[in-house]
Image (cartoon, rainbow over the protein chains, first blue to last red):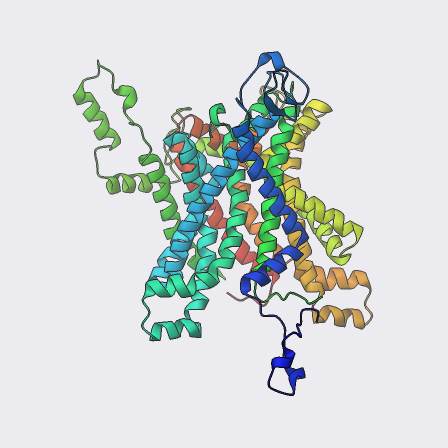
Length: 314
Length: 320
C-alpha cells in the first residue's frame, strides 16, 4: 500500500484512524492513464504512431521538392545535406530515377494517414449517430436501423469502394467518403449496444424523471460512458482505413502519383518488381508499422478505459 | 430445422433487396450518360429518344429498378443478369465460367488453413507462454498486420523472381493446352500461400483464445483430476468445445469462397471472380458490376446461414 499518505492523520478528529482508507482518490482518466502506461506494447504503439505522424508532417515541409525526380541523383547514396548545402534528408538514398526515397515515403505516409484519420472521423460520426438513435429509441427505429446495418454488412466492401471511387473520380475526398460511408457498421453496433444497456440504467432513468431532454440525456449522460468502445474502434479504424486506401491505390483505382499514398508507391513498385525490388520494402514496412501500432494502441486503450480493470497496487 | 432454414431465407429477402437497391443506385447515380456513345451530330434526336425508350431510361427510377430486379430473379434465363458490355455475352455465363477457378483457389486455401491453424492454435494454448506459443503468437500478429497486397507482392518476388521456382501468375502455362492438374497446382502455389498465411494467422489467434478459455473451465480440471492422459483431455475434452466458435469463422470465410479474393486474384492474375469484378470496374462494365455486388450479398447471406446451421450441428445445446 505504497500510495497511502499519512500527512493529515493528526488532523482527524477521530481516534480510530486505522480503519479509514487513505488511498489517494484518482479520477477515471488518471486511472486509465496508469493502466495504459502499464501496457508496454500499447506505449510502443503510441510512440511509433506519434513518430510517424510527426515525421510525415514535418519532413515534406522542411525539405524542398520532397517528391521530385533528379536523374543526376540516380542510385546516389544516402545523405542528409547535398553538396550545395541544402537539407535533403535522403536517409534511404535515391532510386534509379533519382527519387529521394525517404522524403517521398514520408510524403506518402502523410497522405495515407490523413485519409485514414479523415475516414475515421466520418466512420465515427455516422456510427455514433446511427448507433445512438437506434439504442436510445429502441423499438421499430432500432429494428429498421439494424436491418440497414445488416444490408451494409452484406455488401462486398472493398468492391463497392473501388466502384464508387472509379465512378466519381479518384481524389482524396472521394476516397475518404467511400471508406467512411462503407465502414461505420462496427461503430454503430458498438454504440447501440452501449446505449441499449445504458438506457435502462438507474441514473439515466433518474435524469429522465427529472425532466431532462433526450438531447441532454444522450449527450451528457449516455455518450460519455459509451466513449471507451468508440475510442478503441476509432484507433482500429485508422489502421483499417489506411489499409483500404492502400489496397485501392495498389489496384490502380486510388490517387495518382501527384499526391502519392503508400498504396500508390506500392503500385509503382509492383510494376518495377523485377528490376527494382527494393522499392517495395519501405512502403510495406511503414504500412505494417501503422497497422501494428494502431492495433496495439487499440488493445491498450481497451484495457485502460475499462473501469473494471484494476490498477494493481505495487 | 427445415422451418428454421425457410424462415431465415425469408428474412434474407429484404436484406438482399436492400443490397440490390444500393447496387442499382451505385450505378444509376454514377456520373455519366448511358447514351453518351450515341450523342454524335449525325444521330437524330428522335433516335436518341427511341433508344432511351427501348432501354427504359425515360421511366421513373422505381419503375426502372423493378424492371431490373424482376429480370434479375429469373436465373433460369441465361441472360437474366444482362449482357456484359465488354464481352457482349450473358453475365451469368461469364460468372459461371470463372467460378471454378475461384472455388479451387479459395477452397484449397481454406482447407490448408483448417489443417494448419487448428494444430498451431491448439499448441499455442496448451503450452501457453512457452517458446512455441511465442513463435505462433508473433507469426499470427505479423501475418494479421500484413495487408494482403504486401504479402502477395513479397511472395511473388521471392517465389517467381528471386528463386524463379513459381510462375508469375495465371492458372495455366498455355491457354491452348488442355489444363493439366500438375500445371494448375504449380500456378496455384503462390496465391494459395498468400491467402493461407493470412487466414492461418487470423484463425490460429482465434483458436488459441478459444482453447485457452475452454482449458480454464471446471470440467477440464475434473478430467485431469480423474487421471486422464493429457492427450485425451486436450483432444477429446477441450478441442471439441474449443472448435465451436471456429464454425463462425468458417461461415465468415464462405463469402470469400464464392466471391473470390479481389486483391490476391489481381496480383497473381488468377482468372477467378475477384479479378473479373475489378476488371469490370476498370472497363465500366455496369451489368457485371451490379451482378458482382449482388453475388457478394447472396454469398454473405448463405455464409451466415451455413454458419448458424453448423453451429447447431456442433453444439447440441443450440435448438432451432
